[in-house]
Image (cartoon, rainbow, N blue to C red; front, side, top):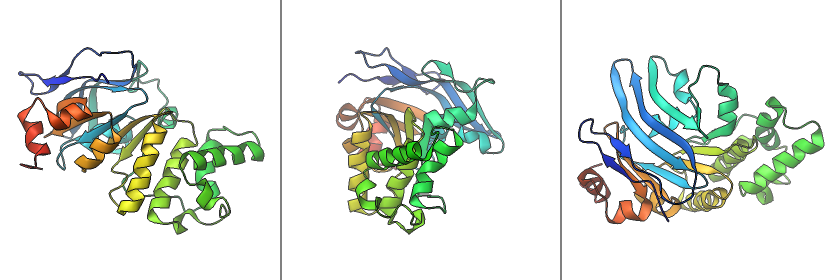
Length: 275
């Protein structure tokens, strides 16, 4: 399996993209991406290609820029006061920070699942139906029911809740709530799913189910996951990117990153010398 390899640029201390190998197309591309919170330079000169129908894991110590970069991919940083993003980030070659781009449409194409399950205070059905209703994706009740069922099936939740669709989504277990949130994201037919530590609040059994689901979902979606668990990154991803102190240090084929990293900082983090 061919992957993008990034090497540390001597001058700026940031990673530089190397040519892609193979025929897997790039879905999202970041070039010289920077994030500033006021005067703080939080993310520095990131160069990264995210390939279609693969899981890319973002790893690194707390505060290293993983979640900051993830939020750049659907412009969630727009809602943070004094946050400024520079550089270029494209989705299928289209600049997602272009003035004419509709952010609502972008967030439908690039869905997000957060660290803690956050179902709406609505029924299970209405949680999943919320997005399709807003975006006018169903013209009648029957179409809406089909979207809800398909989304819950893809999220591996349908069999567990098909007789409870009128119950509150907040009444589900933690793992079920997270799968409900995944179903909610899927319901608007996204192309990319961003996951910010989706298993950090879950028990091992629920975590295993989410990881199985991620592997199934990548057949239809491009997935980017932030995780503090290197074991999880190794299990679910095809590519891994290591961040440290706001820099993208190294990225490539997941087995290569974990067995023969090219940068000493990557080696130090993976072997537990810091983190």
